[in-house]
Length: 100
Length: 160
Image 1: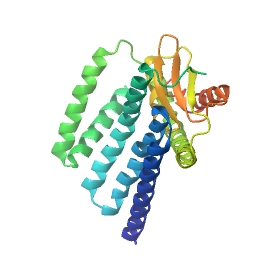
Image 2: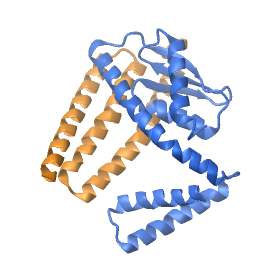
Image 3: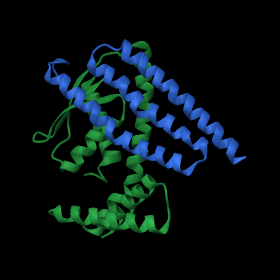
């Protein structure tokens, strides 16, 4: 029973993650300007990747799940820094106009 | 003291996750390595906090983590809408943080960076100000008020 629940939960997380990654890709292609594209990229590197990694619960393998947990922790900590570095570089090149 | 023990436990836990093992030897090595790292870090700290302050801050962690998770989900929905329909009025907004500690300033940055609807563009620690990009900046005062409320309800207890 538990195995079926984990399989279903893992499958749902994988589908949601892939959906978020696809929407983020559409966003990167459609959004105007670097900053707006970074929002779409944030959707992929944040919730998208986290859902895909969290789907590892379906494997029921402690080593795989623990590696995925580490991946989630480091993704959460590093992706905002990467986005900030790109945004700061864009700002230095004059993107974005005056702040409100 | 509680803060030191907590750091050792968290670092040792991270080590055990990396080696994917809870064997006695690995636990011992993890604890020794974590203690060394915490000891070196503790020496570099100029001022230490009291235990009561640490407990008070720890009590605020569930609100910080839970609130940030709620923010991530709601902001993801907003970004999905913008990805499919286009952003309504994207723009840069100055966000005053007031005089805060460096750790609080960093927490502001990470918290805003995790939520997909805000991108931290620049930080001015001296003026206590963040420059963020939002997808809907037609009401900058509303954005500032929303972020100030989020700071009060989620972050202030842990990173004042």
